[in-house]
Figure 1 (tube, helix red, strand yellow):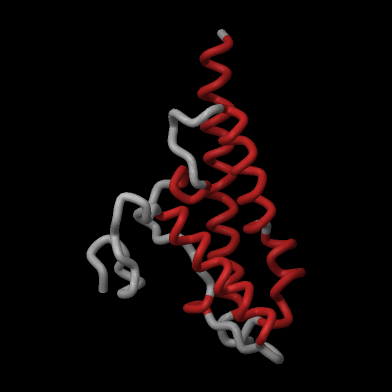
Figure 2 (cartoon, one colour; figure 1 turned 60 degrees about the horizontal axis):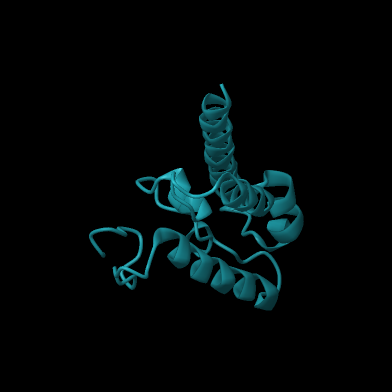
Length: 130
């Protein structure tokens, strides 16, 4: 496994290969897979969850110095992607029964991480206003 990506051995670290870029590529692969499969075959390993060591700012593709508008836009997009109900609506029928509960638990964790980032962004900007 790659030292910075223990779940993926094929990820090459480079200045242009951010966690967000990696996750975007993996998400597109996941969507293609979901569109191609027949029946409930998607496993936990097929879903491109961001590794737990990555920051939530990595998860939404911005850093702390990005503009408020960029942060909020990316947070909205990530919340739509990882919202448990929306995820289940889009992919629920494709999830393997043995993995469905674990996948949905991880989706909820992703959504909670994004929601926490939204709270941080809102708090950071409330400090600037005061």
